[in-house]
Length: 398
Image: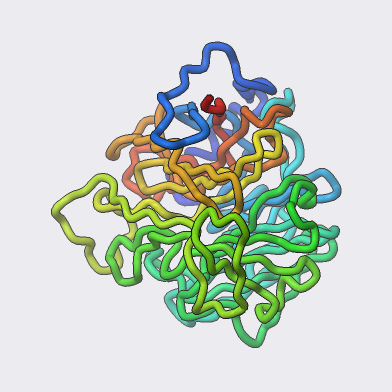
């Protein structure tokens, strides 16, 4: 059986006690009393995001990249937890049913974990992390990253495949698909159920970061300030030689692709630093409260009714959300939500690993749910270490 740390045991007990009373607070569209922030300069969307998670599937873990499969289930991978099961894994895949707005809420089951999903390429001092999922052609794909145990370096990544809806997984065990810290934080654009809204059904689009999955708090790896884009034929996702990388300018009328990963160019560059401070990070520092760069492992979800892409990034203390008319930009910041320094409260908190599962979009694509996590390992004063969703509302700017 799973032995949880005290903070996680307490959180799990609270969730178990309240599971039957779970009620999601957002309807199918934007409630009339939503107070939108003023639009940010140049943004096509105004936004309002809830202060806290309001819908929870009783589970254990973080990150939760997901995709919506042909069986109408959401598949999501967690790091460092039991997922929707009872056995601890450093990485696991889960099948989630239900809805944050349904009376019965969200339910899930763990399908596979640990060595059944991937391997560590970089030796001692590293572990496996899920960074992205893709559902296409009845198959599931999971991007698995090597991450240093102090979260400050991501040197390698590969992609595993399942043809039986998550029960078993295969990958090339001889070498990672991406290494040397180049394009090693990988996630796929979410185009809806089985990628039904993809602009070219023959290709999957993937985003990637170099160096680290977020700001390297001890600066032992380059902080990601650039977002990169790639495409790959859906019938060869695991063949790195078939990947093409964007090599044009953000927002070009027509995309430029190259098979040379060293020639890739960013679709978004943002060198802002939030919560600036005078202190330098210490070796192995796992939590950062100052000098935070804003490009991090998140998700990109396409909103077909608005014909807009949304990239959900974050820092230790903020949400940083961008929108774009094309996969390659131009990306414009439309939400920068600062939750303030620690300690947080259960009434207002941010989180990391931000994604928007397309399965839970409203019909008009103006109401959606953001998944994010707060780790018990952080001095946040609270935790949100499960598959947890909060409403995000959008309004097109005239």
